[in-house]
Amino acid sequence: MNGSLPLGRIADVPIRVHWTAPLLIVVLSFGLAGGVLPTWAPGHSRAAYDALAVVGALLLTVSLVAHEAAHALAARRAGVEVKDVTVFALGGVTRMGSATTARSAGWIAAVGPLTSLLLGGLGLGAAVVAGDVLHWTLPAALLAWTGWANVLLAGFNLIPAAPLDGGRVLQAVIWRVRGDRERAARIAARCGQVAGVLMIVGGWFEFIAGGAGGVWLALIGLFVLMAAFAEVRRSVLYEAVRGMRAADAMRPVATGQDWQTVGRFIAETMPRAAGQVVVPVTDLDGRPSGVVTVPSLRAVPLARREEVRVRDVAAPLESCTLAEPDEQVTDILDHAVTTAGRPILVMADRQIVGMITGEDILALTQRPRPTGRPPTPDSAGHGR
Image (cartoon, rainbow, N blue to C red; front, side, top):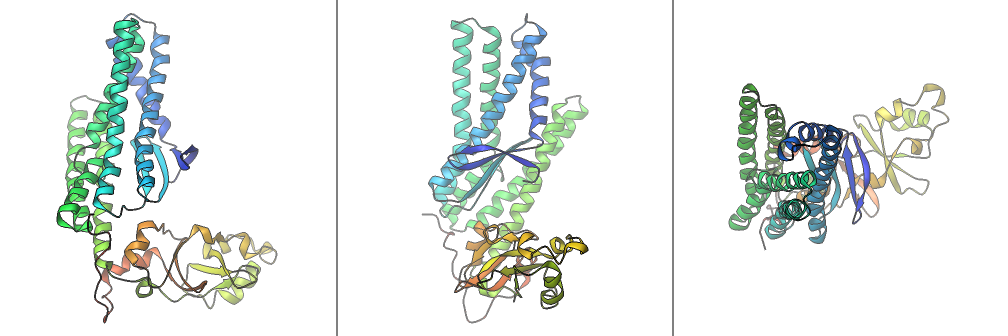
């Protein structure tokens, strides 16, 4: 997610914080200090309410990290690649690959809400001890609020509508029963579209009635709706390319040398690579070393183009997704991260033989299947 800063790692999974996350802390702090804590534990100073409100907001943020970290750890245990975990104003998101079985997909989805329920139970139990045994009314109120917030977080995420965790569980169940992962994903995403619209409408009516929380509900609904639309598009794409190989989808590619100056590269290589926004480059030994984009070349000042080497402005090979010609496109897309400057490079015998860009992936849905090779069933399309 753009605009995120690294916070640390949990079991080698990068944890990131989006720039909107402080907004979540501020909103929660105001709500706690101005309403919840004075109502649940009256008779304390404003300073005490303000201090405990910040603590409560931070506790809930940590709970969100724990929720997402549980997804990440379960995915890693199931052999699914996890890119990172990001906390933002509307919650959290874990970027990961696709599970290969319905059972693992269901467990990865369910473990997040289960973690929130566990944290909720711990918070409520601690609130009972703090209030009834130690008679700490204000900490007890804070712990009770944190506990109920986690319970509500779990309940909300269990709504059977993708991209919420409940939608993922629904998808896993349908996948297991029907044996078709993409059809299951499409059904869960359609439920997400309905849920997103209902949240937006409900949030709007709540706001009209004077409830400030309606704005938050509407924003969450908008996020769910947009993500659900993306899920539908993804499932349609996967269904269209099922059985297609990288060799069927790739385009011919011209390459250049990373040791050349930018000026020489533009003069000699770019005419051969006409129409390519991204050009793969090789080192002195002819081995692929990365890719360079036309905008990054043009960004080098004219006065320095005979000094700067292409390798100084190129992205390393590790930043691209690598594939073999016979690899299934669906398998590639499960772990690919394609952007304008990060194509899928198709390699054979350690040489680049083709390239698949984000535009190519979108065009695959309209390309006729290759003849002479019947589509093979998606190996991930059947739960085991």
